[in-house]
Amino acid sequence: MRRILLLALLLLAGCGGSQPDPPPHPADLPPTPRERAREREAARRPPAPRCPAAAGNCTAAQGRVLALESVDPDGDGDLHLILASPQGVTLPGITVLDVNRRLRPRRDPRVGDWAAGAGPVYRGSYGQRQIQVERVAVWPRR
Image (cartoon, rainbow, N blue to C red; front, side, top):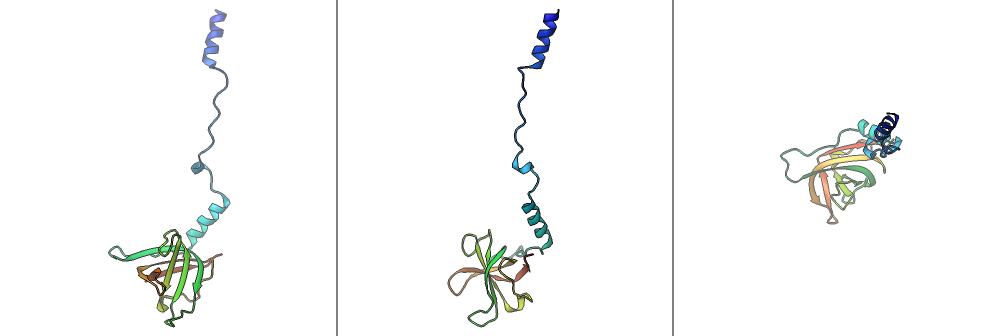
């Protein structure tokens, strides 16, 4: 009887060690401090402008300001912003925003600030594709 009971216990116990838990999936891990900071910053800045639903030749883009041209050579007073943006209207990863004088922010953005714009896409003076913004938002880098 003891042998049967011992054999039953061994069968119930299995082969010994249990399988270790698999490592957690990256999506299940808590956010890193850098990810939390980016989420807080995105929550504070204004919403990115969007194109109207019925607009045909309209594109929206947002990203960090890589460079800007505050004084336009043709003298019409507009502002050109070069953004690092995933939309990549001008080049892959690069979008140029042409901000009309009446839409210029009070203070020109600086390199590293976040900017967004929406409007029709036209060719610029150098043949580049750029957004002639009809709506613009700028947020300073903190």
